[in-house]
Length: 510
Image (cartoon, rainbow, N blue to C red; front, side):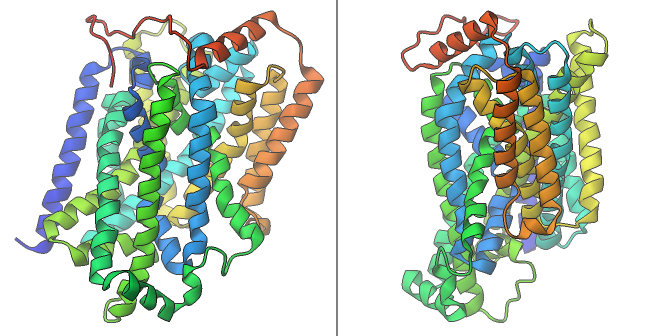
């Protein structure tokens, strides 16, 4: 067998396993609540690994190592900011969001939570937030498809289109039928695979470059500033990179995992597992980029045409072809886990947050699930068309979508959970302001000086507070729900809600 055949066998086994998991989830899915939120039965470890895998898309194994390879440790501020942001998200958002979405009419999507939290009868809040989700997630899904095309193009010499279609096709298959549970369970498997790869590759590469001292010497020969966290970066640039952490609280595909936890108290264990996973994988990606600098300095006969493929090439050079194939499957895992999670959120926005407003009020569970699957397909097709242009790097596409969600939803989520005076008009004005500022700033020369999430988040937060103070009307119902949600989120709260059960009577957990 040739090297490429070994790798293709490993990749095929991985893809088959993902489809099998999707089929298992399909068998467990009975209604729209199952399809969109897995019946609120996720164990903390499952939720943590799923959130991490769906968060750390292809940029973790392609974009971040590539950025470190080109610019050095100054690019690590993105990972530092993300880790801090993720910890804060698990600590302050997860328990309250889980409790509040249950208290607020058992909301199963972020837009429906906003509507129920603020008692918005106009349906504007739900509609606008649903549209924002569709717009920015289309770009986000497109980044995953670009990553898939780059992966197969560089690993197997296929065309970009072929690689993109393979990744999109398999991801669609298990997401269409497995729904949220399918996406979540595949995320767990993919998260474990990503962790293993990001530990093994830099360790083996370090041995190949002669150990720590030889590696550091080689990096310094290329450019000593590559080992500095500040050299080559401006104050605004470092702030921009670290500001990625601001985006966490507004990412629907991540915080929906909090909503699916069994209880708010599970957030504590989820935080420990999730942040531990994140620290290890982020360090692995950073060291992969740095050691890659030393490896290619020591092997000038090897050309690295695209810095974002440094992880791919190191795995191919350093491992048996079959093992390299499994390592390469980790890249697919990062890409596909994010795409699947985002497609499910898009599906929920189309069906739960838009169709239910204008469509049939008495649609059956089977009809709603079918509409959800059609929504997944529609978004995937549009994202695929955008991806064909390849007009931006993976990190640029991810960064734009991340900023959009962080600025549009982040302040509203925080104020919904921690401020009783947030009003419907304040939330609406905040979301629209955040989205517009990100679009305008991100497509102007200003984006070169400051990441668009910073002005977008600040403007969105200020507008939310100012407009809410001007339009707030006291509501006994809202205040009672707020107090109930806060009480349920406390560590010493004794849950009164019954375990989530399936139609067969079996307790549903994942």
